[in-house]
Image (cartoon, rainbow, N blue to C red; front, side, top):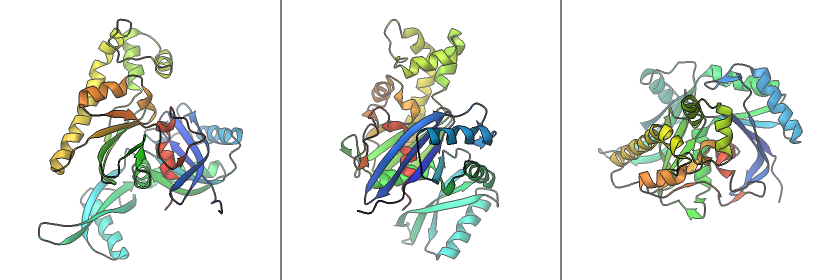
Length: 348
């Protein structure tokens, strides 16, 4: 077997930077190195790079410390500010298709003419009149943001292979790997909830296809802020409690004050997920969500899976294992944090 050239995937979030070195070959993702570091303070604001030097220095120092040798890099971000739409069009050749999608995004959804537009074919179907249409998922991302991250890679003296967005990374990952925590989800309708520090992204996949995606303005770092404001305890102390497994959702006596403080936060998250499920059910009347998987740094919060399972009345669990991801270097307790970075390694 000829080993493929490794890539370095860098998933840049608002709180953590996840790095994965590996390669994809014949339906298997081979992970060689994996790790994370905190985002340097004041270096990123709403995914815009404010201090590229601090960010580049910290990443390259970590790369050197971990003895990561590959120079080829794929960057992925959540792209909360991007405009993402599903557009139905009749069959067209590539040149016509590019023009049609650009015109639709500019004139219907009012994106800038300088935005970088990516698209992928989702499905082919017939409308009520019997006309065959192609459904495309189209994303418009600011050219300024792309330029900032391209410059970041150059500052690190690495080779920028591609820039991706998390939505596309998850689509590729779940298209290739359909056995999650020992369950084959290829023929099921499931929801993935990516709980980040500042935002939460929700995907609904059905029969191997990504049907719905939504960004929620709810982040796991709100837990620290809410508790800190109410108890006058520093956010660093609260964050340490989270990381050490303190259950803020328990109604036991010693935890009850925290549950009361955070009750509205978790209620809001639960209601937003319910709204997305209702939207999906109204759009695909013969289908319904039957399972929820949690991912992202916020999904490690003790008691969250149990809370959502009770309130959504369906199985809820954190992603711990994915079949055919070579996971010698990944523990079940950390798998959930690296899914976007894994997906970015898939370049086919």
